[in-house]
Amino acid sequence: MKDMKAQMSLEFLLYSALAGLSILFALSMLNARSKQISSSIAGYEMQSLMDSLNSAILSGKYVSYINAYIPIGACNSTVSSGKISNMFGNFYTYAQLDNASFLCPDGMMADMEIKDYGSSMQVVRVMQ
Image 1: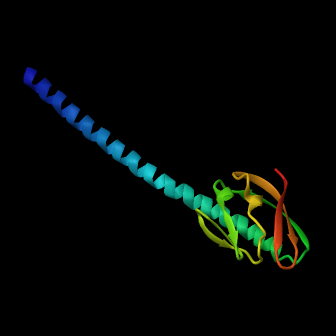
Image 2 (image 1 turned 90 degrees about the vertical axis):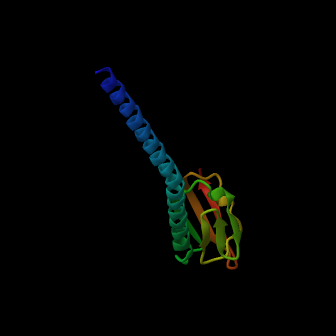
Image 3 (image 1 turned 180 degrees about the horizontal axis):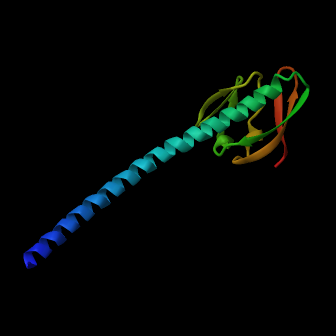
């Protein structure tokens, strides 16, 4: 009878160890995917911002206003020849922008004013 309890205890330890390892494996896989998921969401948010910006540019008004969410990480963007580049990819605009300062600070909703100067567009934050 004593040997039976020892065997059950050993089996319990073995199965507990296997369950713990499988939980650790599942958590590591989830952690690896969460970075991809958050990057995909931020890319979608950046594309949504660019869609709002392009819509205001195409409105044909000298001054347009938009309210949009600026995703976290957008502050590190560079502007060149009609595109905004950052860690999420390249996002194209229908007009030449003068700078990317309107993207800072990021991670918040922002009211923006878009002015058309013919050869370039200026986007400024109205309120933060």
